[in-house]
Structure formats: C-alpha cells, structure tokens
Amino acid sequence: SDVCSSDLIDLAFTSAVLVAAVTLVSDGPFPFDIDWMLTPEPFLSSIVWFGATNWLLLMLQEVFFRTSFGKLLFGLRVNGSAIERFLRAFFFVPSAAFVGLGLLWGLFNRQRRCWHDVAANSSVIEVTSL
Picture 1 (cartoon, rainbow, N blue to C red):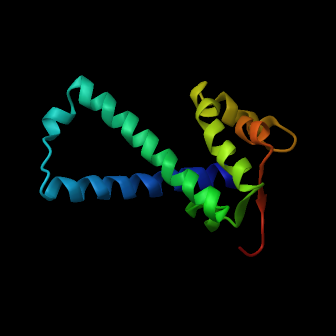
Picture 2 (tube, rainbow, N blue to C red):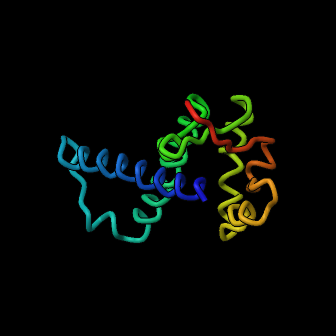
C-alpha cells in the first residue's frame, strides 16, 4: 500500500539525514572511532540513539506539517489534531515493537488503520493537493 511505501521512504530519508549528520560530526572537531562504536555497549547506545532520533524527525514532520517526506510523495496526509498526530507518533513505538503486529494490523483492518492510528483516533488520508 502507499502508506507502507511512504514509511519505507521516510525511513530511508531520515536514515540518510542521520548518517550525513554522523559523518559531519566524525570529520569535524569530534572524531569518533568506529571500532569503539562496534563494541556491545556503544553499539546498543547507537541503535537506541538512531531509533529515537529517527522517530523524533518523523514525529516533528507529521505534527507540524501533517505529512512526512514519504507521505508527501504519495499525496498522503495525517488526519487529526496536533495532539492526535503526536499521540499517533507516540503509539507508533509499541505498535511496531510487538514484532510489527500493530503495523500489520492495518493491512487487515477494514479502515486500513494501524494500532497507533486507532489509539490516537487519527488516520492517513489521500489528498489531491497538499
């Protein structure tokens, strides 16, 4: 579906932004050692930082602009108030955490709403012009 495709594009886009930011930091006044980053503790911290920062970038896009880069490409918009859009982003974490079951739910739900959409009383709608 378009929502799944837009989410994949969002993940690729925000990941590219984060990788570019880390690359800039590594070449700047704060050099970081990749071997150190691959030891267990920093590696886990890096994954948590990456996930949290990725979530933050997407949440800010959806709350303030009602869409994200990927949704914009497909002519999609998040419907609901700013608080509902924030709650949608907040509940995305548990929706994805249960082996993605909350995301897969949208494929079988008649209204195509995932758990985080149901919890926040929001939906993703198709619009002709943003």
